[in-house]
Length: 416
Image (cartoon, rainbow, N blue to C red; front, side, top):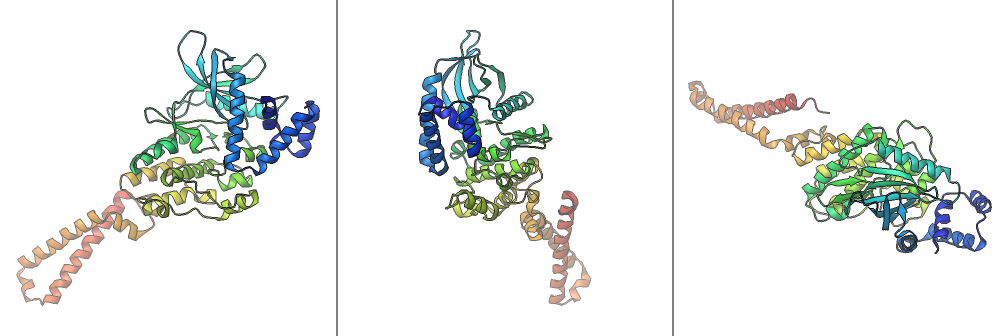
């Protein structure tokens, strides 16, 4: 497959058959390339994951040969790091001799006039320019090449995908890593940005163990009212996308909450919550809307009821039933790490009694001992029968439990 064929393939993959035919005519696409592109489109519609990956690898090799050594501003391209429907990302190094620096350059590759992709690419540039967080890859530079192709120069994160890195961690360390990721997403939300493509491939962990959030290519500004839903639908990653993204409902911060829950599910279990046997588009849409993921505790050991409850809340089908904010999601993860009650289960009295059984039974034991001491020291109790004495001890114990619960309520606030 030639680079020209691949570029045209990505340009028309989101178009309707009528718009695609019009594109071929307006851009005078040669018949041979048109046949190759149409063949790739049929292949793309039914390819298995293995074959699709082979296609992407072949495309990357062609692009690497075409771009290796070429300049992009002050940087020289070294090799392809990754590729998607909107463009390619290259490893590059500074070539002007000013400083020694490596960077990741993202380029929008579009033959002809593709205003939609161009607008989205420029919006990503502006989004990255407006945010600054230690767990979000930084924008270093931006510009256009001599042929008019726009590019972004990003911080190069040398490390591993978050799921690969986390596979070697203990449970507590996995959750601490996830809390850092939540902090980055919460920061984006405070700046009115929804990422919409949170997945392990867009979260790298550097050599210092810091997670870095990448790729705001389909991010959305909360104040925007319109979107190209059909095109964005093709850009989704089904394994980590929320049900409302598949049905075209407006995205909210709850959309990212769902994807974060899906990423955590993968980190904990090694698989996506959306692993369904029938992957046809219609069946996949139905399954994601109605089918619940397998309980994590059935897949791996060590995932208790609290952590399952947290995951279940984040992965609710309806957005309004999930955590209202990413901060709330992170707060429950932190509470779990600190053995405190989690918000999802604070309505459960039995759970709260069990969670705080040590202080509750400690206070109850103290009141019981005080009752026994009173009975032994009080001469009037000598005339009481054994059953009466046991009743007094029981009342003292119950009073201790009630006092401990009251103290807990006063300390934590009303149950919610």
